[in-house]
Image (cartoon, rainbow over all chains, first blue to last red; front, side, top):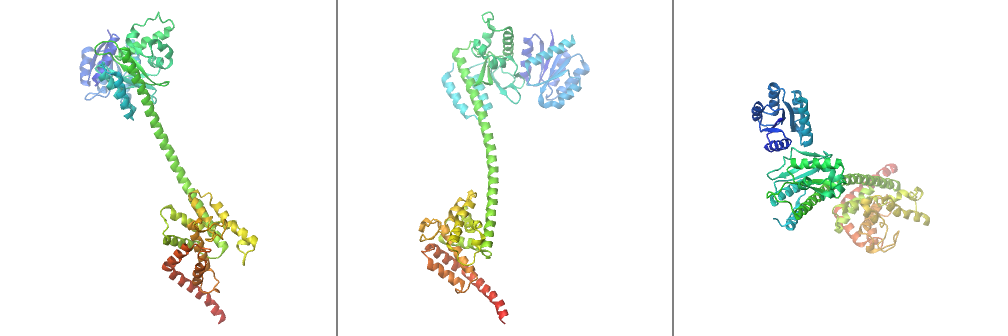
Amino acid sequence: MVKLLVVDDEEEICDFLKCFFEEREFSVDTACSGFDALEKIAQVQPDVCLLDIKMPGIDGLQVLKEIKDKYPKVKVIMVTAIETTEKIEEAVRMGADNYITKPLSLEYLENDVRQKLASIA
Amino acid sequence: MINYSEALKNAARSMVRFKNPNNLLRMVVRFIARESNLTQASMLVYESSKQRYSFIDSKGKDRIPIHLVRIDLDHPLILWFLEKKDKLQILEGYFCLKKLKSFNRVKHSELSPQDLKEIEKIKELMISLNASLCIPCFYHEELLGILILGNKKTGEDFLEEEIQFFETLANDSAMTIKNAETQTELVKRNAELEEKLKENKVLRDKEQQTYYEIMLSLAQEVRMKDSSTFGHLEAVEKLGIMTAEELGLDLSGKKRVVLSASLRLHDVGKIGIPDSVLKKEGSLNEEEWSIMKEHVDKGVKILEPLTDFKEVSDIIRCHHENYDGSGYPRGIKGDEIPIESSIISVVDAFHAMISSRCYKKGFPLDFAINELETNKGKQFHPKVVDAFLNAFKKNMFAYYDSRIKKEIKSQNKPQDKIQS
């Protein structure tokens, strides 16, 4: 089963996306902070990570750096508010595989995740 | 179980209070989530600037993270509400997950494979959003929002009555959104109009001011042409205002300006009188007189564009009317003549007499005062004459007395020299 990690400091968003992707037969883990995320990545080694940028403590960019350093196979899609434009550019430079701004179209998100998975296979 | 008609009435009453439609929609969402005991209640609204539908609020245990999800205009949910209304009638105008799940595609052969595919997508979306009902908020043909509702916590199906209630609430919400929009637009348009009016008024005031100034210089010009007396208009203005004050006339605000303007502009119509008549030495014949008299109507005509001072031309129209009715152009009498016109008549005559360089008739001040007294009740309004003479003796006599004596002296001096 495809493994997905959702990282967002809003628990509601984690829960919602978990339900959404589980409904589509993904195995979904969630992390509510950057710290939590680093732990989960080591634990589950997801195929795709949906990663928020703005989080208290360790932010999305630091998590991204860690992933790209240690687990380069993990596809990372930044899921973030439009206000963080500069950070989005930085994330892309750091090797993020795509970015999607909130609010997002669920259909588009699903297609993008599937596309990234197809590129692994 | 809620009393739907009562709830609707309450909701409608509250809706009136909201000027910001977003607050209203939040209220509706909270109201439904609380009163109807649903797993969630949410509202999508159309954001015209971004061409998408996004969540304004979501409440309940299965609520939707409102900042995460949006619905694009090309999503089948929107397409069906906007473009496939006739087909939507099969589903009674709204989407109910339960009905979609038990949808019998064989029974509905009028639906194309594309339609069925789209219905499938709507179903998926509703499952993702924990929605069991999607009810459109229409204002006429505009889809302003969508009410998205979860299941009853009891697991029971919705009753027809309940769905009707939600539909009414959805459409009332749409109407209120539209009202608020219209109101915002009206307020904006009104502000723009007011701004324009203000600009116009400034321009107009400036125009009127310019015109007034042109009139004043015209009047000065006429005076220069008519007689060499310098400062006549200024003096007439001063004496006239003084008389009006003595009479106790109300000179507040614009009234003082109107009187001043009338005093200064009373002979502006003489600009249209040929020099041969205006400057003629000696008395005028009958024909010349009738030409001369036209200056009153000509003045009124010249002042017509000065709409801010309509009163000015009304006053000027009568400044050659006499108290006993012997004046022109209309021959009106007594109190039919505006008091301001009577003032002009008195002070203009008086100042002309004391300015005349002809001292044959004796000392000009005595002569002029005597002349006013004699013509009181004939040419001149008696009250105006009395007021004028009172004020003049109080305030101006000494000034004019010494000035005229000085003038006489300086006129005599060179003569003395010549003689000696």
